[in-house]
Length: 197
Picture 1 (cartoon, helix red, strand yellow):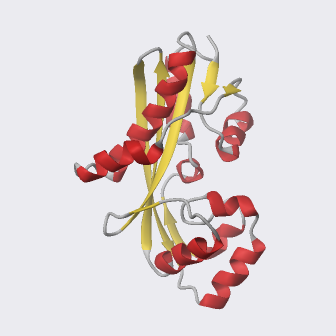
Picture 2 (tube, rainbow, N blue to C red; picture 1 turned 45 degrees about the horizontal axis):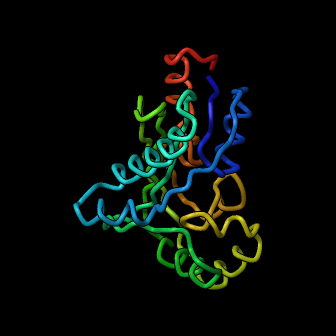
C-alpha cells in the first residue's frame, strides 16, 4: 500500500517530508466551486465545505488507485459574516482581499481526510482564528511587492511561514492546520492505519 498526498501544495508536501513520511504526490482533478456552491446554498458550514472538498480530492485519486491510502486536504477561509474568501485572480484582487481582511478576524478551516477505494476512512478539521492588523494602501502595496508570486495563489494572500506573518496581530489555532495540513491528528490516523508515522 502506497501513501499518496492528493495535493499540489508545496507546504503540505514539506510538512510530510519534514515529518519523515514516505509518500507520493498526485493532484486531484475536481471542480472545487462546483462542489462548494450547492453546499453553501444548502447552508453548509465552512468546516463542512472544507471536509467535502478534501474528501472529493481524496476519492478522485482513490478511484484511480484503489489499493492505496490517499490523503486529501483543503482549506476554507471564512470571514466573521460566514462569507468564504477564494484565491484571488490577479494582483488587484489580492490587494482587495487584503483591504477586506485588514483589521478584522477571519477563520481558516483546514480539513484532511484519508480515503481508500470508495470510502473516506477518517477525517479531521482544524480551525484557527487569525486577526490581521490594520493596513493602509501603501503597506498593502509594499507587502504585495515583497512576496513571491506563489503567495498570490493563497486565499487571504499570505503564508504565515514567510513574510505574511507581518500582517497579523494575533493568531489562535494549530500552526500546521494554518499551513494547510493538521499534521498531528493525521500522523495519529496514519499510525492507526498501520503505517509508520
